[in-house]
Length: 516
Image (cartoon, rainbow, N blue to C red; front, side, top):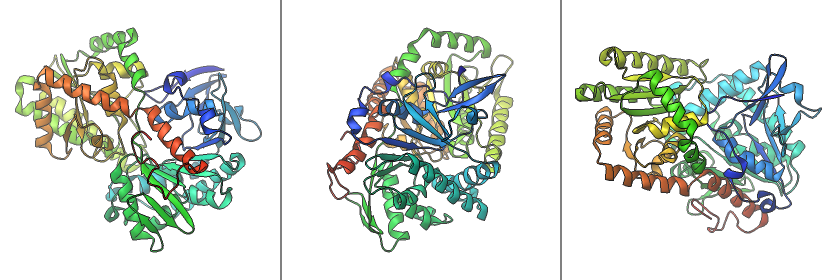
């Protein structure tokens, strides 16, 4: 069996991620994580089977915890060789090279993937939560498959969760699962969920097909966590409008409904700050940058965007601001290169394909208008690069343009800050990203305000060195205080407080953000 890394720009290092002995902290109970995407998949590599490490932020935060606890991670088995390595219970040890926990795979056929994942999850819930009502497409089969797949995942949970365990659902793919699990599992089992994307205001959410069932589903949790306070408040207001029988306490963040109590709070997700900084300082990072600049002949000043090619990321708006910048500041032509590191996503959905076509047209328009034989204003590429290469891009970029129309948190902004080991970069950040509530030394912009966005680019490029360094030092402090290990600890400590009776859904002492 061979090993390979694929599909992500971050990896994981268990010892660096957390030094907490989670096995002792969680005590007698175990941990069951439920996510749509699995941390490891198996694929054919000729006659061999290779392991692909899907090591995004979620895996980086939870994989070392799972290794310490020895619990079960339940996820969709999407690798073409996944069935070849599981046992009779659809389980395989993980990580493959040094097993520490069980990976339980749930199998989905093509219709289920189309309707549960590409359908209801990403053509109903995703656009609703990102306030993109015009992109909502709903068919009855989407809802039927979403219900069915949520029930299937709960079947897997029931096979592995014991009384006293913590079951941690991840994200919007499993809005119905907590209520289903609440009916089937022991009352001593703690159900919790982290909602990684925004929760919209009531006036938007009321357009959600089956919205009442969605709210009832997530209220099956004992603990429901969002990134920032405004999503928490949006959810509590939606509960009040949707469920007449619910009792909502905004001060303590508790909801009582149908005989149960849900604690609702916010813990901002972070990144592995120290690891990213080490990568940025490495010889491999320097070698990548030397090769990159030789291959592409970038200008002396570099602006960077790192995005999934998604309509929520504000990339066409960013290109308009850059176009106006070069129009207003011809002296910067030939002196500034904008690098767009994109990752194609969900292209089979029309709204995604449309924005990807729009981005491609925008890049061509700007380059045709301003480019010369010796200089290309916008360099756009989507091939995979290693985590260290990405850290190199971050550290060598003079400014980062992070301009989502709506985003739950946006870890790219934090990764850029973590890689700024010389404190020279400037972060331009959308005020519609959750990170905008935390990173107060960034230059905040409203992505659709092209003139103000252009002003921010001009300010970033002409900012005095002392101000740049002071702002970046402040940002690095904020990112370090809210790193990935802190986020993991806050979530699990809150769940354990509920389980062990050290805190309750009626006590204000249960943490609602920051260190417990």
